[in-house]
Amino acid sequence: MEYDLIIKGGKVVFANEVKEVDLAIKDGKITAIADSIQSDGVNVIDAAGQYVMPGMIDAHAHLCEPGRTEWEGFVTGTKALAAGGTTSYIDMPLNALPATVDGEALQLKIDTAKGKNYVDYALYGGLVPWNLDNLEELSAGGVVGFKCFMSTCGSDVPNDFKNVDDYSLYMGMKKLAELGKVLLIHAENAPITDHMGQEMVRQGKTTALDYVASRPAFTEVDAVKRALYFGKVTGCKIHFVHISTAEAVEEITKARNEGQDVTVESCPHYFTITANQFAELGPVAKCSPPLRDEVEQEKLWQKLIEGKFDMLTSDHSPCPFEMKYSATNNMFEIWGGITGCQNNVDLMFDEAVLKRNVPVTDFVRMIAANPAQRFNLTNKGELAVDKDADIILVDPTQSYVVKKEELYYRHQHSPYIGRTINCRVTKTFVRGNLVFDVNEGIVGEPIGELVTSNKKLEPVMA
Image (tube, rainbow, N blue to C red; front, top):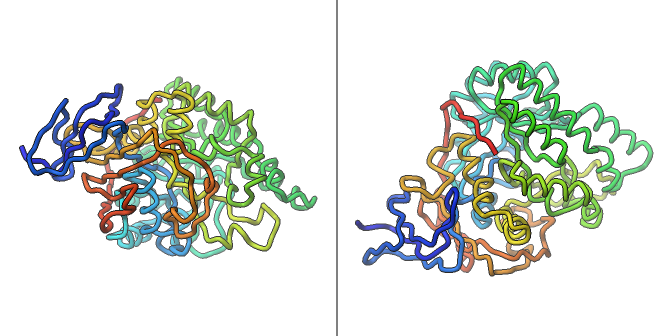
């Protein structure tokens, strides 16, 4: 049989083992896996010494288009994703304008995204207080899940996103349970964090560590427990985004062990940057929930090592320089969001696999297999015959320093600039097409395709 591409001699990461085998690709699919594959005249990639893994599915990214393309946009955002080893992502319903909270806004985003993505993509719908009657049309339109905020969010800009209150959260969960869709939740107690922040500002306490102190760990745990109870009552499937505390992970694990359909993610910054480092780095490292202290971070690592996280995501939340580096010294007024999706895979491979001996098979489950299963991306997430040839090569021996000028973001700021990472994504293939090469950079034109889901979802367990 003739193939389009053969990847030879790499350490291929499967669900439960790593084997030095060859992969053959034809028409965008993996068509053969064997100890040795030969084919005359075909393009052959020598992957000796490198890990061959399914590309990351970043299940939490904000690309801000349409409406706020000056913040990021599909072209620049997906170049960064591709360079970082991501082959598919799921775009959040907020930060774009209009927010994706009804069928019309969803269609606008679909139309806008065409021809601009270097990697494949899926979309979330939003749950906000006024769109309970729009959830069904969003589901029918192919969104793979829904997102809500329990913490205060949004702005006075027309058509922006808004956090739920308890009533709309409960009613939304009831509806999504009927639709069989997962609800992604940003879990922080809004009344407490809002009032603590206001009191900090009133007292003139506006530093990075003051901001962290205004959103203590218990406010995340409290919101998680409340959302879990709502989920238990309604039967809604839940996914908690960017969890930052070990106690919250334990509450989620307990609920899952009791039979609740719930999953959990966290992000590289919660494992690699502490609150004290935030104070040194400044606004570029502001996010919510905030970065935690060294003790809490070590507890979070232990939960990851124990296998209690289902996914790693970026929560890539970019903005222009002036929203991070304004004239104000008030950390409460500065945009909160980490620009970091270009360093999802290499940073966490270095920190988890190389430094803490997390099995590479566990790492791949968190970045690829579990997101594919949870959000019903049925052709993605693993290296197997007939699956999409979404493949990355990672060299565990290449160290490099993150440099501003090598970032593909529209605005080249990141808390990782200047950091040494002890491995490197060397190639990224989307459906068998090379889209990034470490020596050539981004290759070719945007080829990303929209992935939709209208099927009921099966639970995924850590």
